[in-house]
Amino acid sequence: MTPFRLPAIALALAALSACGGGDSPSFPTLDGKLPLVIGHRGASGYLPEHTLESYRRAIELGADFIEPDLVATKDGELVARHEPNITATTDVSIRAEFASRKTTRMVDGVAETGWFASDFTLAEIKTLRAVQPAAERDQSQNGKFSIPTLREVLDLARTEGAKFNRSVGVYPETKHPTYHVGLNLALEDRLLAVLASYGYTARSSPVIVQSFEVSNLKYLRTRTAIRLVQLIDADDVGPTGNITLAAPYDKPYDFAVAGDPRTFPDLVTPAGLAAIKTYADGIGPWKPYLISSRQVDANNDGKPDDLNGDGLIDERDRVLLPPSDVVKNAHAAGLFVHPFTFRNEARRLASDYKGDPKAEYRKFFELGVDGLFSDFPDTAVSARSQ
Image 1 (cartoon, rainbow, N blue to C red):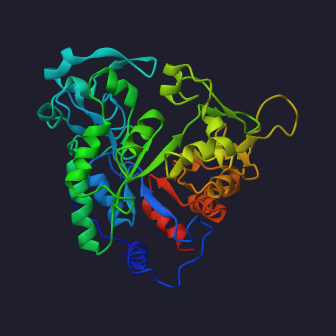
Image 2: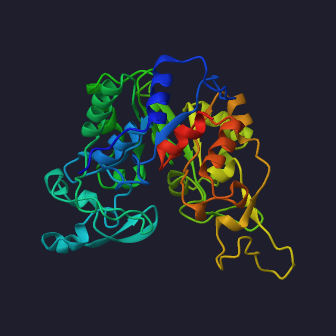
Image 3: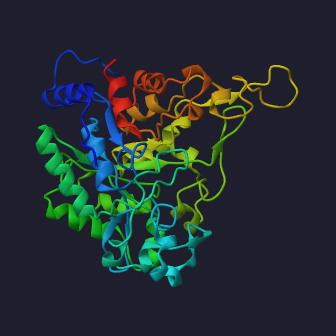
C-alpha cells in the first residue's frame, strides 16, 4: 500500500491541538475549547470502516477521537463492527466455510437475516476481512483488512498519539445492549474491564462511551467516572423538516422493552436533557435535531421541487431551517453536544451549502457544537481552522 502522507493542514491542526495555540478561532462550545473531530468508524469515507487502517487514517488526518462500535463474539471478546450482523461489512457471505452460519435473529424487534458476530469465535472473526458497505465509496480496499478488537484499537490510539505527540481518544459505542444481554454477552462489564486494564477509569481518561439505550448508561455511571454520552436517533426528516419516528428508531430500545412511552425527541426537551444530566455528560444527537431542512414546492403541485435540476430528489433539493434550541438547552443543562454524522458527498448536503461540506461544518461549529462525528476527518479539521 502506498504510504499515506499527512496533509500540512492536518499536521498544523494537530500541533495546534497539542499545544493549545493562541491563534485558533473561538467557538461557543460548552467549555470554550475547540470542538472535537471524531473519526466516525475511523476515516470511513476513505477506507473500510472499523479497521485499524481506517482508524490510523483518521488519526493521520487530525481526528481527536476515533470511534469503534462494539459487538461481542461468541467467546465474549469485544470487536469493532457497526452491527452484530456482519454481512454488509465483511466478506463472510462469500466464505464457503461459514455458509451454514447464516441465520435470522431479532435485533431490537426487527428480524435480520445474515451472519452475526455472536456466532463466531474471535479466532474465526480474525479470518474475515472488511469491506466498504457504501457502494458509492472506494471499493478497492475490500478484502484487505482484518476486524480489530477493542484492545487493538486502544493500542493504536496510544501508539499513533505518541507518534504525533498528542492525545488521541477512543469513543466506543455499545451496540444494541439489550440484544447482547439476551445472548448472555452483556457488553458493559466487558468494556469496563478492558478500559480499566489501560488505566482508563476517570473522567479525564481519553475515552468517551456512548449508547442509544439509557439503562446501560445508567448502569455504567454506577461503575465508572468515564464520560458517557446519550445518543439520540430518529427515522427520517419529513417534507417540512419535522423529525419522523418509526420503530426501532423512535426510542431507546430498552424503553420499548420496558413499555416506556418516551421517544427520542422527548430526550432533547429541557426536562429530558435534565434527566440525561443525572447519568451522562453529553448528548450525541442526529444532526437534524440541531439544524433541519425542508423541501420546496414553489409551484404548489404537491411534489418537491428539483432545485438543482438533476432529475433526483435528495438533500441537495432541501433548504435549511433555523437552528433549534437543543444546543443552547443542552449547554444550559451542563451537557456537551456531539452530533452525527457528517459526510462529504454532495447528495448528502442541503442546497444552502452549495456542495461544499466545509460550509456545513462551519454552520454547526458556529452553532456551538462541542464536537462532531465525521466520515472525512480531514474536511472537518480544515473547516474548524477557518
